[in-house]
Length: 148
Image: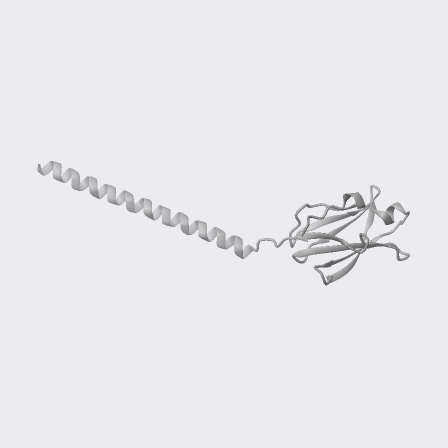
């Protein structure tokens, strides 16, 4: 998927690479705002079929409509904007889409940590074994010297 850049249309997310579970700020300063809309809702959904669709009220802050959105699914976040009288800004029918990546699950992080712990334990065991072998060799060598 081509990376979406919508700055020229007045649409942006607060994070370049949002992940599931994060909250991002959706910012809109586009066509509806420029035509005088005093209220705007963001219509959002995930992936091609607009899973979990929502209409989210946006608030006007510093001349930009904003809404904080909790990212619920990986894939794509689709957005379009509507004013109270039914005018839409949907990027000329293409919608505004943002790639969403999966966040690493806690179990995956624990597995990584466990793997590191196992590697560290094996390394310590090899070190102990090597030290024991070295000590045994030195002992045999000193015994041979003493008997010679």
